[in-house]
Picture 1 (cartoon, rainbow, N blue to C red):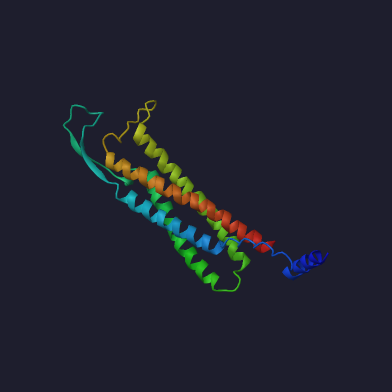
Picture 2: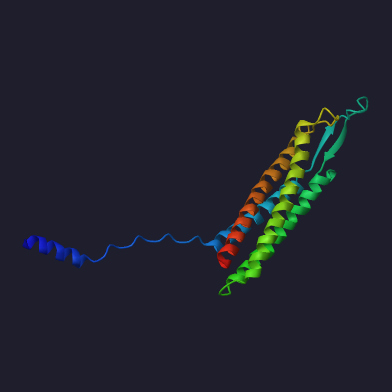
Length: 198
């Protein structure tokens, strides 16, 4: 009987069971800044790779086969889709620089204003759409250069301008990563706004 009393007293001395540790909330500010730096780096890399895609080769004009071979250049400026790609990617890169600075300045305040979160969510969605359209336009022209189109008589050029096509393909793939990161940024900005208004 005494042992039962002693065990109950020992249980009372132990006290209540410790509550399990709550998981730490995700640091949305750090995630937002990291994604913006990633988009900035991908857009800068995509622009540099696209701009350096020029290649000159000695080729025969298929429409004038009896003429001697001539030096012909393949440049990104020959395609309006690639020019639009450069313009859109540069715009998104500039936007990332501005929003990184704005995010750092907003973090210095105790609580960033709600209108800033709404503006960032809206602009992130807009930039995601612009970059996605540019990637789609550049990728479609790059595919035509790789495969051609026999139905309309467009010849493939990637069998001749290999370096040019490698640059174009690399630039499109890099910027595709940036557009995916922008979509994630839209989600982060929207969730931040939701958490503020909840």
